[in-house]
Image 1 (cartoon, rainbow, N blue to C red):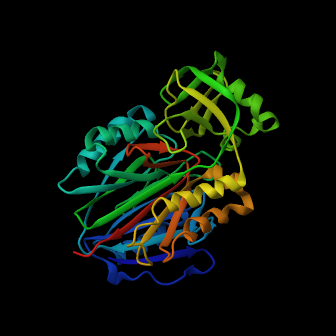
Image 2 (tube, rainbow, N blue to C red):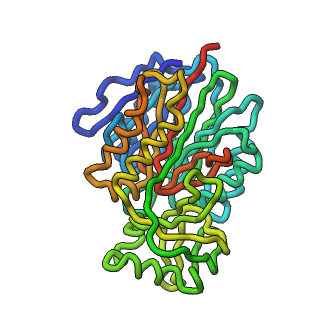
Amino acid sequence: MELKTYQYTPQKHWNQDPESSLDSDNTLLILFGPPDASKIFDIVSALQEQFIHSLIIGCSTSGEIFGEAVFDETISLAIIKFENTFIHQASVNIHSDNNSQEAGRSLARALNKPELRAVFILSNGLLVNGTSLIDGLRQELGDEVIITGGLAGDGTRFEKTWVMADFEILSKSITAIGFYGKNIQFLHGSRGGWDILGVERQVSRSENNILYELDGQPALDLYKKYLGDRAGGLPSTGLLFPLAILNDEEEDGRTVRTILAVDEAEKSITFAGDIPQGKTVQLMHSNFDRLIDGASKASESISSNSNINNNTLLIAISCVGRRLVLGQRVEEELEATLDVFSDKPQQIGFYSYGEISPLASGRCDLHNQTMTLTLISEADA
């Protein structure tokens, strides 16, 4: 395969002109850009004229990753021309998290063709229950097909997000690319690095991704107690204190969930994924060194593959909460993802509202507050 990565900034425009010679029926453009889609309409239109045969997938971000650095109000772009891999795209509209599972099943049915090996998915970050979305995909595809991706971001505003399919910028949609054939190499890794805060509590009342009570107490009241002076900044300050669900299928025994919204009247909290009733949970808080070590361990889990080189694409999807916590040290986790490789891949990515990747058991799930990596390459025929 041929791979080129590019960056667009408002000041300097493209760091180099995207090569239209890469256009083909088996070419994929992956684009991450700012939440205000109006800022990139002209740029996307120009790409559409250059890449008339290619597919494109993309989304809004809470920060665009290019190489070892994170940017705002830019575009990170990868163009991959496959030689022996077929690709196909499917998209679906979504209007509320209530139809997330059916949206996942619909996408899976559209992509479920012979020799499907992997799926990369980008979703609206606010209207989707990520757990239900992945359940729908798994119902149709099983666990043999690798699924990775993420939920689009909108900085810390939580107002609107977009995804891109067929060079259209869509506000209420989910889009995915299927990769087919024996030559595609699709590796993945995901790690967290948060510390436990406080005692274990039981989810005494919840419905899907809405948490009402912990140990019989209103969930929002309990969260505000822990946040103290930061409670007035909810939901964005809740990113600093994610919730851990005890889960034996994870490497570290925990599935992490992050806040999307709060309801003062109901005293409830809406999370990016399900909070099953009866489960044991704990609040978490940040540890700078452990977050960066988590990013490094995500890379270590895939770095032993001998086919990784500069013609390999590494897509880094990290949670916006990690960016807020790390602050000026945020680029250390991006450096950490690349440091473990002797022959470094080309890295792009984004800060998200949720990350999608298989667990240690092989079952795909939604993650929050993790560094999730997808490595794409192609073997010779």
